[in-house]
Amino acid sequence: MNIIAVDDEQFALISIENAIMKAIPGGSLSCFDSPSKAIAYVRENRVDVAFLDIEMGGMNGLQLAKHLKEIQGQANIVFTTGHSQYAADAYAMHACGYLLKPVSDKAVIEAMEYLHHPVRKAPKDRLHVRTFGNFEVFADGVPLSFARSKTKELFAYLVMRRGARCSNKEITSVIWEDKLDTPALQSQYRLSVSDLMNALQQADAVDVVIKQRGFLAVVPERISCDMYDFCDGDAKACNSYAGEFMAQYSWAEFTNAYLSRIL
Image (cartoon, rainbow, N blue to C red; front, side):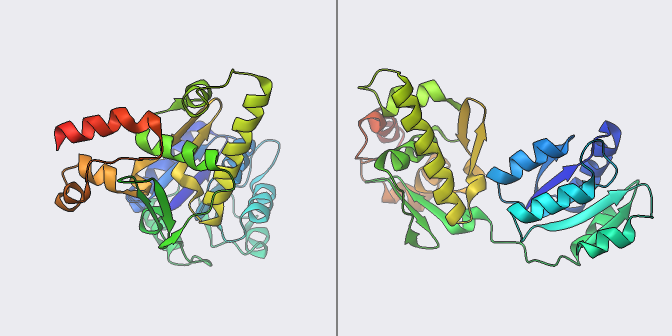
């Protein structure tokens, strides 16, 4: 379950963060102190439940909820506030809850019982990555389609790096090793990143990749991957390794040699 909390007051944000973590220990929580940061995140990441403060400077919680629903119509909205006068407006927007501050973990648990939209399947249960032999990606058992071959290769490199933050420069130097770092190459890279996020969005797994300014990283916990299972000592994964790892990519040879040594 992917959750966000938004409040422009730092102590209130810490309070709701603690309540959510106690109530939903298995959830993935991202907290924001401004609506603009939350909107930027929601454009790139799936959100199941959003806990929004109503009284914030600039854009208030009701306005923020409207923007979030326009981006992700299936997101569940729960409002948090120190006042009760906004309750009618909140429920007019089909909110799943209206929690008065200070928010308790008990109140969060109760709100979760009244979600309007079902929480979607976790990406790890849906996205399987095969690295032994050739690199392939499957969403619900169906091969994931990438618009460009470099898009698939980009994702393969992120998977191999297993959660490490990869800079734009690092990625382009590996994936486009025979090309100079020119504006044209940077444009091609940005297109590949956009294609990757679109492909993951179609698979409802956009939060498998963390996209930050100048960096990309895969979230290993959200992927089912034979290499990860192999490195964690899974017997089935060890038996499935036959000496080939992402065979179509020359830059994967060093990792393949490492896997052969530790088998």
